[in-house]
Length: 213
Image (cartoon, rainbow, N blue to C red):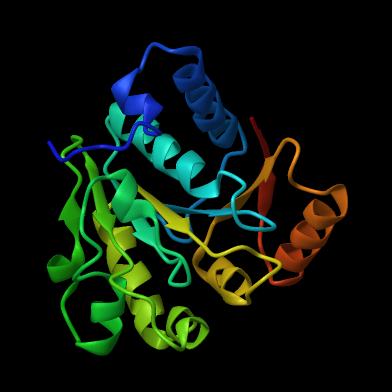
């Protein structure tokens, strides 16, 4: 197995109260009865946050692990091409990922990397381009999502902070539901309200808010 970050509590300490909280989040999403955009097609969840450093990526990674532990086939897409971090959590290098799918015409199989956790794969960002919003809003991204829906039961999308960039609003087009992560002591109430309104204006189905720490 790759060298996992200690923030991946759901894998490293699965019987801890924190891990149980992530399983409770998984259950809460189930009760929302998210319907994939097509019969027999994988469910796409986007994890967003108003600003950076609110625990969005950590929440996404641990939620992904709980789905894999449930026996689901899961893939994470690091669509945060501004500040990619998922490769660090799973002990990978940030090479041959989403950016290379866009710019070098690689196949889906070329950019999917097993995490070492059974049932869980990752597509790293692959770099920090000068035009991330144009890439995540492209027809190539749409094609990628269609292919992943046919391969996986759960697809989780990590996005840049909602209030700082347009990328998150663009990514809602591919998502069946969105979770908004906020952080105790950091996220201002007005930020959360603005982020929710911005995402809903883009057509997002808001599933709820995660109050982190």
